Figure 1 (cartoon, rainbow over the protein chains, first blue to last red):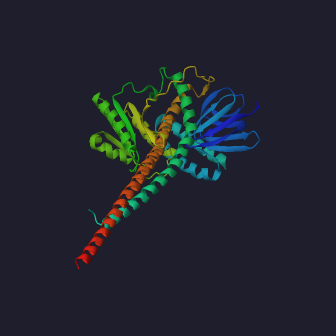
Figure 2 (figure 1 turned 30 degrees about the horizontal axis):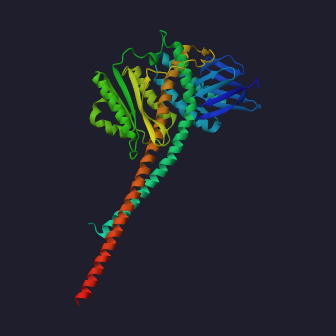
Figure 3 (figure 1 turned 120 degrees about the vertical axis):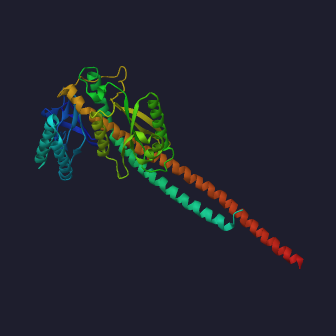
Length: 132
Length: 292
C-alpha cells in the first residue's frame, strides 16, 4: 500500500515498536512535524516530546521520548530514542526523576549550555503536561 | 598410602565440588541466554546509529568545522584506555585475554613515549593490571552493584569520558572488551572510540537517498557523536557480559568433567585398597589358623 510506511521505534535496550503506520507526529528539534508515506528523506534530531503514531488500522499510540533522532525516507521511518516510554503511569515516575536531573544540570550550567539545558527542562515540563 | 577413611573423605569433597561447579555452569547458561538476548535487542539501535553516523561523517568529516570528537585534538600524545573486565572470577581465561591485549597496547604506547591513562571497569582487570601499571590508573568504574546492565550505566561512563575529553585530559580513547563469538570462543577487541572512527562503507554499496538534515549536518552530527560513544560503550559492555557468562560456562563445564574423572580414579583406588585390606585380613586369619 502506498499510503502506509514502516515505522520503527528503537531504544538502545530494545525495539519498542515496529508497525505499519499511516502518519507519525514527531517532536523535531526545529518544531513538530507530521510524517506520512512518500516523505522526502530527512534526518532530524528530536527534543523531548510525544511521538504519536497512527497505525494502518487507525489505532493511535503515543510514546514519550526524551530526545534522540529520526530517520525518514519514502517507505519507512525510524525513531532512535535514548529513553522512550509507552504507558503513562510508569513513564511519569521515570520522567520525574529525569526532570530532576535536568533541572540540576541546568542550574549548574553557564553561558550557552545553560540556555540549552533550560530549554531542555522546559520541553520536558511541556511533555509531562501534554501527557496528562 | 592414604587410609580408606582419607580416600572416602576425598571422594566426598570432590563430589560436592562437582555439585557446585555443575550448579554454576547451569546458572551461567541461564545468564548467558539473558545476556545474549540483551545484546540481540540492542543491535538494531547500534546498527542504525552507526549507519547514520558514518553517512554523516563522510559528508562532514573533511570540512573545516568538523566537531572535535570526530576530528580529534590534532595530537595523539595522551591515550586513555578503558579496560572492561568482569567483577567476578571463575570464568576461565576471560579476564586474562583482555588484560593481555591491554598490556600489549600499553607497552607499545609507552615505548613510543606516549602518556597512558587507564580507566578500569570491573575489578578483576584492575587487580591484574595493578601490579605493573598502578601509576597510570585515573579512575575505576564499579559494576558490582549492577544487576541488569542498562543503557544508563554505559551513558554514565560515556559522560565521564566526554567531560574528561572536553577538559583536555586525553587525545585518543580506546576501549578493550571481549567480543562474543560463541560459547567457547570470545575474541578480545581493541577499539578506538575517540576520535570516532568508522568502517568505510562498502564499495559499490547503495549510498541510499540523499538526506536533508535538521537543524544542519554539523548540528545533527554534534548531537549524535556523544550518543554514538555511549552506544559503543553500551554495546561493548553487553558483548562483554555475554562473553563472561560464556567463558564461565565453558570453564565450569570443564571443571565438572575434571571432577567426574577424579571421582572415578579415586573410587578405583578406594576399591583396590579396600580389597587389599580384606585380603590382608584373610591372610592373617588363615595363617593364624595354620599356626595352631
